Image (cartoon, rainbow, N blue to C red; front, side, top):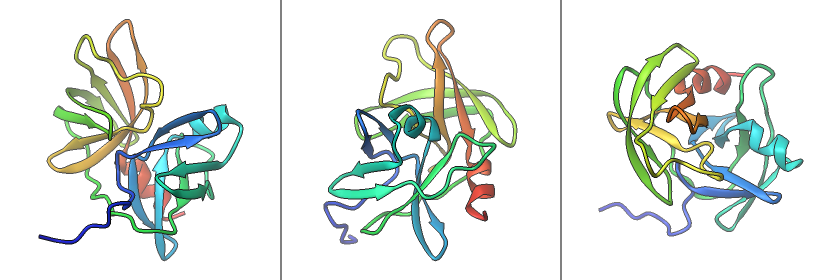
Length: 165
């Protein structure tokens, strides 16, 4: 059994930004260290680049011009996320508060469309929740349509592209 610090930051953890918040979608190698990845729209809506995840204060360092992603360096214990390419089929939407089975119905290199189960839909604060397929994070939930029970996720392929920036 591996030792894991109690306060280790990982994919699926909740964070607070201003009066709002979201979910750390992934922890990725970035500029010789590690960075958390979350949807940029959370920080635009909150009017801040500052966030708190666990007992750690962080600040968004990079937001690409063409993707709803925000990268923030994590200067503490964290668990890197294995990223994978999304494919049609079953997937789990998973964060620190809850998880639910859903299905990827369509995908491109940058976006995955997710059919969510009726009833307990993700709500405010669930943006960024990782989609886990075959043990890897394949996307981050960005938005959903409450009338059709369909969600849009940014693909891990887009995250990989931006990790190089």
